[in-house]
Amino acid sequence: MMHRTLKDLIGHRIHFIGIGGAGMSGLARIALSYGIEVTGSDAKDSSVVAALRILGAHIEVTHEGDHVDGSNFVVFSTAISQQNPELVRARELALPILTRAQLLAILMSVSKSIAVAGTHGKTTTSSMLAVALQSCGLDPSFAIGGTITASGSNAHKGTGELFVAEADESDGSFIEYHPFAAIVTNVEHDHVDFFATPEMVTEAFGDFATTINPEGFLIYCNDDPGSQALGKAQKVVSTISYGTNPDSDLVIDKIELLAMSSKARVVWRGKSLGIIELHVPGHHNLLNGCAVLAMGMALGLEHSAIIAGLATFQGTGRRFELIGTVHGIRVVDDYGHHPTEIDVTLQAARRYAGDGRVIVIFQPHRYSRTQAFVNEFARVLNQADRAVLLEVYAASEKAIPGVSSQLIVDQMTHGEFIPNFIDATQTLIESAQPGDVILTLGAGDVSSLAPIIVAGLDKRFDAE
Image (cartoon, rainbow, N blue to C red):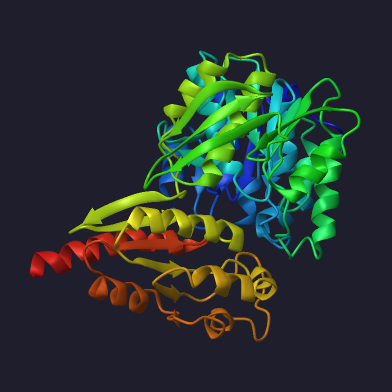
């Protein structure tokens, strides 16, 4: 496909296949802000689809070939099957077809772009950065794979020169972005359907780093072996390191982790900059905040303004998000779907629960990931006082014979496999006690159970 620019898109119609997805919906929102005509399709209606309709998008909740008729461009994500009837029809009509990453790259190209990459923490760090920049009086554009709690949005076309983009590595397409600067939070093996080995992930991030503008910079985490190796390997682009590692350019120490907040001192090359205070829990979020502070300083912003901005950050949807409290039972939803993410989430949940129990309802995401990390999932989930596992959420994968959530449960000391959603929620509703924290966990549709559990607890205690 020939190289496209934003000028090529304005005044034309773009059709988004799977427009309700976290990444696609954000791009559609920005396209609408440019006055581009937007149509789209999704498998089901949702609040995201409804919001896009209000902004002017025409969206169908079925996938039919004729939905692309009259479009000038068609955009799809790699989650969409190559046999999708709309994609098939677009090829028949010889329409220009863009991947989600290619469209994001076009939208980023007219700005001074900052890509936030890493196996874990991309969404939260991107969100923190957007909020911190806004608090500095800037108006950055952003496209994030989750909803910023304070604004209720995952994307925005700003008036400023900066564009913050979450750079998804899952299919290697983040090499399309060519950012001015980047943050890499960590580099770890995941997306085993695409990256068969850890070395392939390392290579992909190495390729990504070569796309950073030579006049820009790379912010990397010195506590993570993968990110550290990436940062130290750079010979062209400038680098800034952060972490608890005393060799870092930006060091955090005197760390305090509380139930729903965290704080630490930040030291820049031997000089104390003050205290970062976050209204989100966990050591990992302090590191995310540290990355944002390092980026802000690299951009020439006052450290005090960035620190003040971080203090206003209220979190991101599906990242340790409190859905409701009933009779002292707190129901929290979280997107964690990799063992490393689950580990830090359960540590935060333990602090949040205090003397109460931590009860998890976990839905593994993808058969390939489940197969690759069976033992790791079992180990981290054993931290919970009770863990109920749903069946694997396939996403776009075909089932792998013999791979089931039961494999994880078999390696656990107190895991339960309850594949039926109704049975799983009912057993937790009936057995939960005041002080418990119930955590719905996973990247699939397990999040839909959190409000059902809250409603069920309301009904139970009203009856009592």
